[in-house]
Amino acid sequence: MSVGSLGIEIVVVFFLALFLLHRYGDFRKQHPLVLFGTLLSWYLCFLIVFTLPLDVSTVSCPTPKACHMPWSYIPDGILPGFWRVVYWTSQCLTWLLLPFMQSYARSGGFSISGKIKTALIENAIYYGTYLLIFSSLLIYVAVHPKWQLTWRDLQTIGIAAANTWGLFLLVLLLGYGLVEIPRSYWNSSRHGYLLAKTYFKVAKLATERADAEENMEDTMQEVANSSDAIGYSHPLRKCIDTILKKCPREIQDKMQRRNVEDGEDDNTHTIYPSKRSLTKLHKQVINASQRQRQTLVQWDILLEEAFHLEDVQRNLTSPSQQFVRSFNSCQSPSWPSRCLYTPTVEWYWECVLRTWCYRLMALLLSLLSGAVVWSECTFFSAKPVLSLFAVLIQIAERDHNYLYIEMACFVTIFFLCVCIYSTVFRIRVFNYYYLVPHHQTDAYSLQFSGMLFCRLTPPLCLNFLGLIHMDSTISHQQRIQTAYTSIMGSMRLLPFIADGFYIYYPMLVLLLCIATFCSLGTHCLNLLGFTQFMSQSNDLTSDLVDEGKELIKRERRRRQRREDGQNWKQVSACLFFFESLSDHR
Image (cartoon, rainbow, N blue to C red; front, side, top):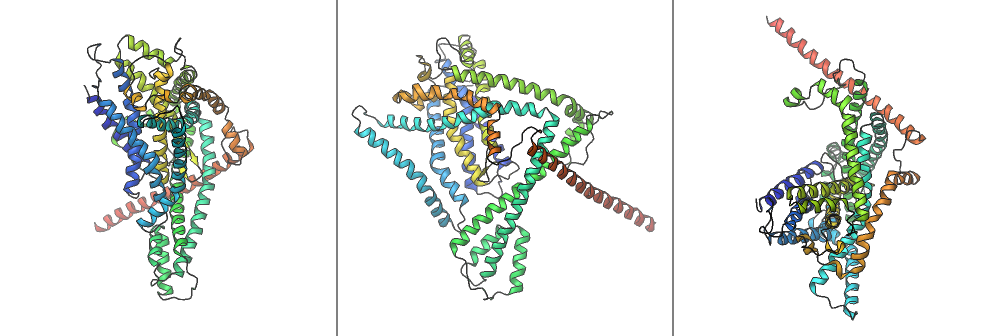
């Protein structure tokens, strides 16, 4: 295969990143640079993760003559250049380009130059802080008598600093994901729990939806006041027109009717808004519109989920063993689905098999999480080897089973990525950062996720190499290093990081897993006033579950009336057709 396996991975990973971006972003409405920056950052991170097993198997066979050449063997000189391009491109994205593009996307400026100016001002403090730290380090190195650093050493220090910051965040996310992912599968097998949590989410989302609509109304009132104050002959009228284009269609039509009725030369308004206030209003309109769209889409998705869970609950006692839905799906299923996923098959899956499959999946993921926690706490021990993943890789190396090496590495690093990346997708920081599916994620959140991926992936890969004892800095073994480790440089230059932080800090994942298992974060958020779903014995949770159930009943009656009306229209049309046909005869 030679480099064919690398080429296949490059293509497959690209389509994976493109699929995720299509799910969360909007190709038609969002700026091409935003989409390109997010796609490139996700693509590079996924490419690092999926290519690392090939690097490990290539190192296990240093030369084709020394052993049986693996099917995915990559010749010397290709991977080092590949890693340099991928790593430094991702670092330029996360530390330079994406922060600037974030500020540019959030800016309420009316021109490209205005948005660039706003982005530079907002990032001046951000970049100034890093410049101050970097200058202090250079001064320290210059005056220190024992340090004679080269450009390569400075690169290594910069890489170590970035990886240290990433490892700090990596352990926090990993400790959450190792527990929450198996638990989410287990809870998904509990139908009563899942339905109660859905009712709880409906009640919370109803409040968010009302707040978003109220915020939208207040914002539209400000837009109306500004539009009334600035006539068509005013120099700032172009700014008002730009703001109106970001408003819902009904608001635009309403503003046009008001302007026609009031006349173009209405000079009753003497207080004109400034361009700075219009810039702020423009940003406010963008945020309000995005938030309202997100809540409306999430509301429709949550209603479908609640209706489906109620249908499952009703069909559990069905004697016919055929799944009956309350409402017809908005999208007609394809013919393979109609032929294979029949009502009988759906009943057996939803009412019988789904519970046991999810429980089995939760058990397997729990065992894998336990292996990761054990290895994170013991991977520094080279003699005896206590890391489970290192033991498996060393056994496969002795047998020259390169396919097994690649599969074991792929499963391990893929599980670590799922634990970390899924946490990134679940995080919600108020309304500033929130990844929403169905093309509803805003530009700021998309680029912020790209920044997180680029900062988390390199330390994740180094941590994985430490787990399997492929990093001599941690395992203290004399062996050929992977091409990825050679690009990172020797961390021995900073012994307090290599022998201290990189080894002992990952042990904190055990405490974080215990805290996540005991739901300490949920309890703390509840104490701070951020309502979270807890056991139904909790009074607040029980009240919200009851409220959500009533909301679902109301929406069910409303949808039933709408479907009855549509059915009656169809029946009336058929009767009219037959009557006209009989009259013609």
